[in-house]
Amino acid sequence: MTTKIQVNGLRMQGYHGVFAQETRVGNLFSYDVEVTVPWLDAAGSDDISLTVSYADIVAVVREVNAEPSRLLEHLALRLRQALLGRFGEIEGGRVRVAKLTPPVAGSEMDSAAVVIEW
Image (cartoon, rainbow, N blue to C red):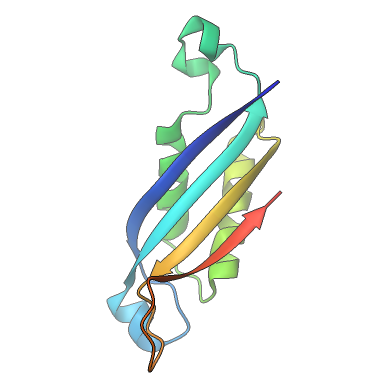
């Protein structure tokens, strides 16, 4: 049996992008993170030390978001690597990184996103 821990719709200002304005002005990014871990004793004991806290996942996203990347693909990969480095019990997961209202000339869209699953 496994446990899936999710953080959904986490929004943060970031300075990721290819264009100079994106790295100066920034943009709003949305993160969805799901990690799969072995069944945790936390469920039966109600002990936070026996789980991967979603607050700790948010802290990892903040750290990764603070360092600019040009590509969403690179940003998503760095987030995956940081999660695996911090939480050895992660068996699998999914990371979705979306740039909200990206600056694409002549178009209007809600977001552009990259998803990594492992």
